[in-house]
Length: 312
Image (tube, rainbow, N blue to C red; front, side):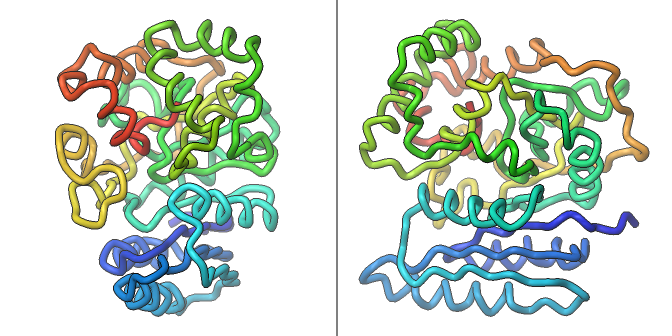
């Protein structure tokens, strides 16, 4: 078993049932450093207070040799600023980290996959994200361990401070026409239109309760690539559940939630090139841009409900 020397960050809030499962996976991995960031209960929500306290009790149960750092907020920053603030805090302490949220259950090879790629691409400015999620389940798994993508899931991921430094919650650069033109060139007109509304809403600061679009925006405008495993390594437990923030029910929850995880073969097969796999990106975007069954639910539904499915 690979010794996990890479720091792990866990973002939690008010879901003790899923937190317990994710924490057990972390306990098995036994990271040497663990950062725990929790948003505070919402005003007037006694259930939040009870559940947040239950979550704190779970994540404090560290029974292995580990340096533990905690950031428990007394106030509620919301599901946009809350996780973003926690992730920024983690990267202010360490140069690189593996990040999990309280509903993202990692398979047994997720941590080793992230750790090896964090080390290999540590100084490669082209790579900004190591994703644990492969939304297609598998992709060219017989010939490779991973591929590169212009996009990348944040249901279990890893990155470096050098990459997160480009994160801007307000995406201020969206205000520049040159940026918008280059994004359209990069994404294609149809996919750009799908994202433009949410980018504009984020830029204007209208009810922004997400952070992953901003993280995807940061990578796109830097031409940053994501590493995507050839086999899915994360199962999102929050899809379709009552406590889910963005994916409570419907086609996306059924298709992408609770996906099975697979084992990876080590040592990893490292690529001799660093370039996005357009075949994968096209097939992935087809599911969210009017060319798959999900599109029947409408573009507005996609933007409102699938925020956490595709970070782009």
